[in-house]
Length: 212
Image 1: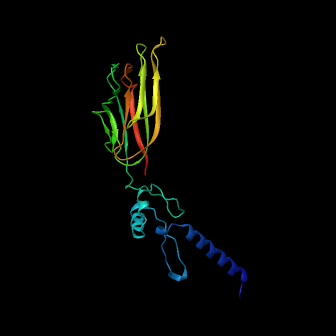
Image 2: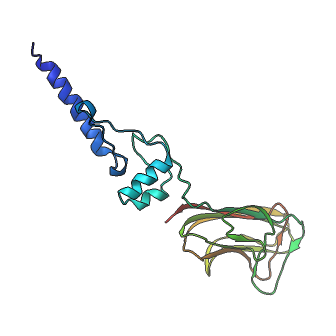
Image 3: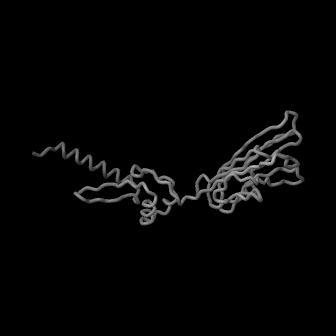
């Protein structure tokens, strides 16, 4: 016996499948026409996604850490560049004052993924184009003023300052986010005539937030 409500339910179910299919990126669609129906297969491995992306000419998927789709469980691409560093000064001594602006050198490297930081010069050089976050800390005594600047090429991003005072020593920190091209340099500069106290109080670190 013909039952119209079964037909309506079937059509609604089929419409729901079609709508979900249309919301799925082209490079994640697969067909199975067995028994007159199709299914959308979950893609949970990066290798499968990369292979399909190349087949459908979607190169930008290679840099995606996670693809937003109900048919993708998770995907952390190994092709995404990884850049991060952290360095400090273990020797507790006064650094400065100097007669000229001086780049601070953090020789104790805690991590340097991507080899962007040079512990001999104190300069980070961007290995890939992207948006980076940097932070730096410093400590000052009461004998001299402190004026420390985070520099991107020749542009000042942020600074820490503390004038000579009778309240003893002080610690401070600051950070910045910057868009870097390949070869751009970021470093911490001590302004002439000022000083810092090194040791674990003074550090310089940064990481790639995402490539561009």
